[in-house]
Image (cartoon, rainbow, N blue to C red; front, top):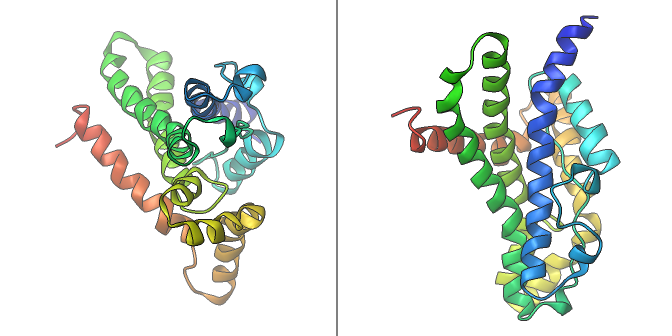
Length: 230
């Protein structure tokens, strides 16, 4: 096994993932704090210290599995959800939406910033130039992937909370009940359905349809917006 090559590959993904999930969760906590709920603030979750947000499965095991499963081409993960007491918010229904979109919104901003920083690469040279360039491109991809994925309308994802906040009361309550099984639904769609599709010869990669394709579209838009395309 090429350990130096593997270490380099991991280094090109670990930093973007850590920055992406840390900013995502810190943004949730910060917005909740500013809107009246200091739960996350009191627990030290309004922080840019990655150690306060690391989740064993989402930040360590899942990225590792995706890295090896993709042959070192992709890593994706998530952090520990920031606790929010929605009853402590000034206007719970509206503020729940604002807290939810803060995470994906921060990832979108970080993606744009990473793309803009690519213009500074000519100031570097050699291996540092290559390493920094790969990290910034991966940062764009991972942040947009995290943004799109989290906006899927499935509780407990941010998009699910936004949908619960926007839907009429009855429909919102029915959707909210999915939160207990939401993670299982997501894991089934990401891992089990593609595996079943591979066995029966049918493309069932719903993750690519609903997350991968929109992410590719957004990457093109972000690179164009920041002067890297036409």
